[in-house]
Amino acid sequence: MTQQLQILDEIEPELIDRVVATRRDVVLKYARMGALASAPIALALGANQAFGQELPQKIVDVLNFALTLEYLEAAFYNEGNKSRGLIPRDYRTVFKTIGAHENAHVKLLQGALGSAAVAAPAVDFTAGGKYPDVFENFDTFLTLSQTFEDLGVAAYKGQAGNLIGNGAILTIALQIHSVEARHASEVRRIGLRLGWDGAFDKPMSKAAVLTAATPFLA
Amino acid sequence: MTTAAGLSRRHVLKWAGATTGIMVAGAMLPNFGISAALAADLGEGDVGVLNYAYALEQLEAAFYTQVIATPFNKMQANDQLILTQIRDHEIAHRDFLKGALGRNAIPDLEVDFSAVDFSSRKSVLGTAEVFENLGVAAYNGAGQLIRNVDYLAAAGSIVSIEARHAAAISDLINAFSKDTVGMQVDKSGLDGALLPSQVLPQAAPFIVTPVTANSLA
Image (cartoon, rainbow over all chains, first blue to last red):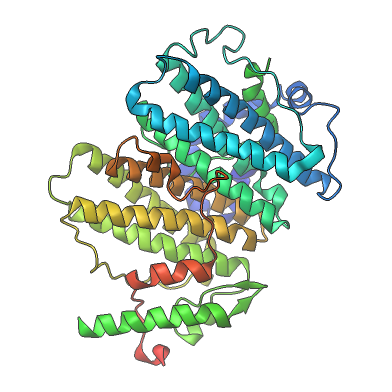
């Protein structure tokens, strides 16, 4: 967040005045989250990952980070889509399609990483009992769905800069990023909310994303 | 009217032709059909990409401004709320890019929406869907042309909003359909990504830049 604010500040001072006024609470929240981040990074990415020989380490790291999030999302929708009576009929097409996308993203990133791909993490969508009815209560499911989608958008956005110089991989990451944003918008709409929080989406650092995701990793 | 159409057609040709002839920083960039003197002001590399985005945001902002100024028949409160917010976002994007470009910004573009029936919900939303999806693909394809990490971050903060718009518009057209999350998403789960040379021919019919006849020569 801090970095993003600096970026915007350099580009257009007037905008930042407007944006910062509405973002101050978010900034503070992220700042607090960042302090907790070191343990989850190790947890989520694993210590024994194999490394691809063709891709630079920096890119392998980004892709494994993305893959971890995609594993989480895919597992979430796979479970939700097979939970009888969870998703109202009207919304099943949307969640089936989202689930298919997340599984496709997993496959794509695994393919790009080859032997360097991390394994799927163990998951706990109740977050240690905080959301015990996640696959029984549609409102709970919807809340977590929006959380994961908005988190995914912010996560990819936060990593784009690390992919400058590798046009092919950057483009693929951007093509996933906007799909996550489509998901986020529609999931919000199903929850009777607007599909966005404002005119500009915010990036999140890897540490902040992992902190947010950690409660769902068993 | 005839004159406008003639200008418009000549712009289409100019834009389409430009994509094969202009190489800037290793990337194909448009000259936007403006005069040679102004085209020089596009600058190289990242400035050219930002001007490209600025042109598309100008187009979108002008479109939604018209949509709200002349509401289609029986516009519902939900339509109005969403379209008004999208208008405000596109204006914010346009102004942001203009500010970022400073004196390198291309001039205000004159638009031509004569192909749109603003009294028709179907025509308006159909056009909006085209613009949003084109915008998403344009930003996705242009990302790799950007060298400055700050500009890439700024573009990233805009493109996901365009994708959110695209979903919302598709939902207004056909609620909870596959299109809401899946329009122009392929079997690998990837969204569209187009180069400027692929985007501009689709945008050009809607743009009539305020240029003199000399610049069309």
